[in-house]
View 1 (cartoon, rainbow, N blue to C red):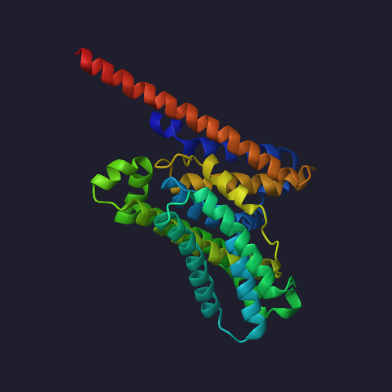
View 2: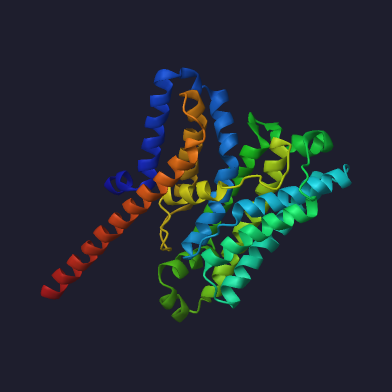
Length: 328
């Protein structure tokens, strides 16, 4: 019980409940079921991207190109829908997933085979992907009236009271929880991030494991590309610009250690929900949404400091135990 109370997940749940209670004390309508469903739906893209980013960070890497991947894939899907309005939604979803995976694999190959630092690779591809959007679209927007009803309606379709977009976020969370906990690849993410040198001696290929983390992150970014463009019914060069900061913030707030090897998938989801509630609450309490970036940046700094302090405390405990064992 004590361990549960000290966990980052329990702390975040408590903070989220307290935050909702604080907002509800002034604006009771905010916690109405219908509004909470809207908050979950608005936060779903952030949850999906945070899941992919969490896996990458677990392997001691970072993917700053997720928002650009989203934008490029979304533009391709929108242009595909304009050119072929009758194309079935499952085909568009496959295209989005495949293109996102290819863009993620490109990042992974550069990190794995050329040993380029992940932050450098993804800063480069962040710009490259935005440039490709401009080239293929000639800087033009794809607007709602050009998209088919089926294309824009899919994420909004209600199933058991929740939009498809929210269900996709929930199912993706469940899938990642199972993968990380029950598969060799999931355990490899933690092993590689925790101690790359030891991972090599156990037979793990560090570069290949990081490559698959980038592929997974890219695939989820591609999925979000279609969902984002379809939900907001617009595609353009600067879509989701700067969103990668919120994604990293969600992971760090959720307890994913920037140094790799520590954190949980559920923590990343809770971090995303925390930011989603703040983002939706800002206009309600009369604060400009532009403060969202400042809040996300401050949250990253505070969470990293908290994680570093916890890591030092754990290190002192381990050293103290070792000293006691040596004296015994």
